[in-house]
Image (tube, rainbow, N blue to C red):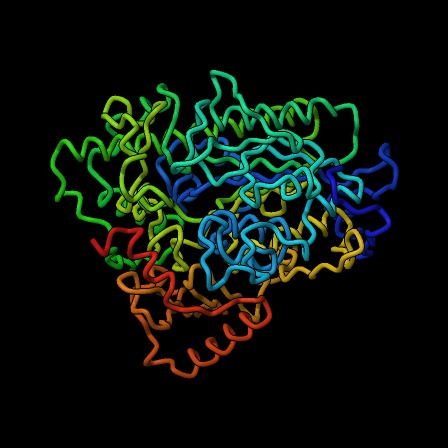
Length: 568
């Protein structure tokens, strides 16, 4: 158990939770390791994956493993996260709003007006307990491999927040190969193993491969111990820089030569077939950052097509790697009794590499070899750009960093332990990333503690997904859910959504959309529904008050414009 964890005595077993476990598994939960038949929990998170990337969500990329998992579990089309990586991960691991969890802003973007405010620490807060802290104190073995991004210091590491065995990248991203080149000028990428810094990586290191290898090794080492496990596999794929093995890139050679406009339409038609969007949806909201494919010269089109080939290869390789892990669980007899959850931390990333702090002058980015032949290989740094990010976010508006649906709606697959009732079906009720932790607690037969190491912790705002998964509820949040990040704001209740984004991404004012008929957020219906909009605005203000949101509108508007090159 990591430092700072609490003891078994801090956990209260909840009778309804025990009943749910026994109903799902057909067993009685015991106290000792030999009789503990509670489910294992495997949480897999992709990094910057588009909503319609995987095959079972309408994508053309080869993802047979995830498609099979979807057929054995449930697909959820209305699952929402935060607009960027670390705020989502904070909400995921605590069941709390990102501000309450300390990630009201990413650590890389703290500015004077919010510095020192409790909700904007830029690392995981002490006023929340984490999934591994709770599950570890309740008899679960806890493992993590991959991206952390919730603080760099020793006391902020996953090993200090409840994980018993870890191999983690502490940063938000960087090279997927052994060279440890960061996203922007500065020290090399920071890896830790069980809290200790790892300074050298194997020559053949590739992030997706080695994260998967590490998690399998952790599980295999403890294979004789039949205690249930909580394993968190946190990939950095397909986050930029886009890197993939040559043979996987070659699989997609020529697939994207028709460009991102064609791909966006192709994905839309696939989603219509899946009934995720209505047949009548035939238009998209213009993206001010994405030029038409036809406006590029042929040489530039070739480079852009290669970038999407590399991106697809990253997703394909990740799918294969997940397959290796699931095969291991099958071979060791643990697959059947494992809850498996897969999703993306936010939408695809349409920001240019120059948007990372320190990259605007081009000097650091100019040190890479981004020739057509080297794109996707070591010593390259390419991103997917606005065009491809918008295409793989089809049918939604914008992508990562925005509180529009393209930034905050994620594909979600859930396979329950045992046989999943209604396997292969879709669920369309509203869910939020804060719901995952309460779901895990319920299936583990435990509840969130009130005290950790002598300090009070805030109760989760998330709600268990079990009633929705079993068809007993249509949403986990009938009162609605709010968002704020980088002064981008939103609130969703039922089919209604209010949204505030700066120009030119939005109007700069609050807008209102009916997500059932307009998931692409094309037509602002504020004028026709003033009373509804007023109620949602009041709900957002209450959300902000309850979750330590500091309203400092205007600061990040300028930052966004500079980052996306709109002031040049």
